[in-house]
Amino acid sequence: MNAKRLAAEQAVDYVHDNMVVGLGTGSTAYWAIRKLGLMVQSGLNISAIATSVGSEELAKELGIKLVSFSDINEIDITIDGADEVDKDFNLIKGGGGALLREKIVATSSKEFIVVVDESKMVESLGKFPLPVEIIKFGYEATIKKLESLGCEPRIRIADDKVYVTDNGNYIIDCNFGKINDPKELQNKISLIPGVVDSGLFVNVVSRVIVGHQNGLVKEITNYIQ
Image (cartoon, rainbow, N blue to C red; front, side):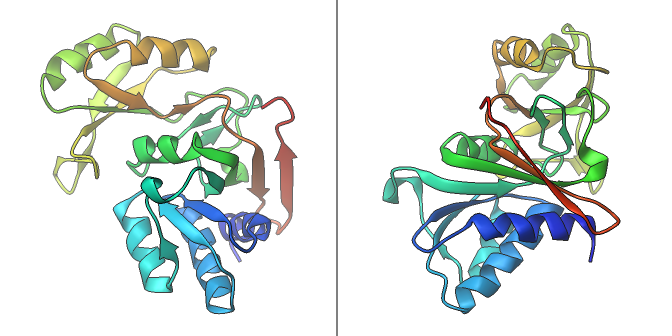
């Protein structure tokens, strides 16, 4: 069994009857959704909010009941992956293009559990380019302002065309190199007109579950969060 799957399936142990569950997006979250589907088929009663069209379709296929934010007051637990996790529980997310919905769901959750394999654990963020979601109008100007913060920005291309998110926006992958202060950088990016949000997740993680290639799974709890 691969490390991502091990971590994802262990995270699902925190889900109980009558919970509202946030479903992440990407290759690790996929395994969590699959396991939840099996548990639902065995009698688990949950409602869920998905962070992407892809995760929504998978949940429907598995018989997981989907709800909207108008139906609930808060989310009990969200399980999602990450592209990088640093020693202070800061994340880079957005490699799968769903960073905006992922952040809305994560920050609306009582508990946010991140599941990764050991390769995603880093001392400092920044080796993985930071995804920034921007609106289409004036995107060239927005990219120049991002560049002025000291990064090398590239508009995301998929299947030989500009990638468009589920929200109808563009993703700019910004190579900042080592990110020493994620919170400060997030604040600067947020001030740029045209930016919707960045893939920096600061002070939102409750617990990180790390799968290792040797079959071990390690849990790290963020007591400061």
